Image (cartoon, rainbow, N blue to C red):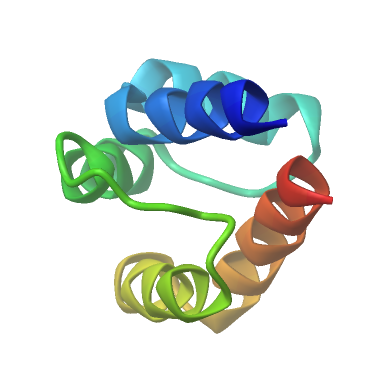
Length: 84
């Protein structure tokens, strides 16, 4: 299980705006290219552990500042699916 967690966290920490946009589109999450780039820039290289609830909550708050609360809530649902 540790390997899987490491792989998911690695992907989150290295995601690009285009990749994030692709995932958002697949999951019907409204996200502009600019928002995706800003979120990816925030995530990139920070070594976040999205399996930690406090870390995930902090991420969602930062995403809400970029995209608004509705989109942040959808992205939180996505992260919960990845971590369940």
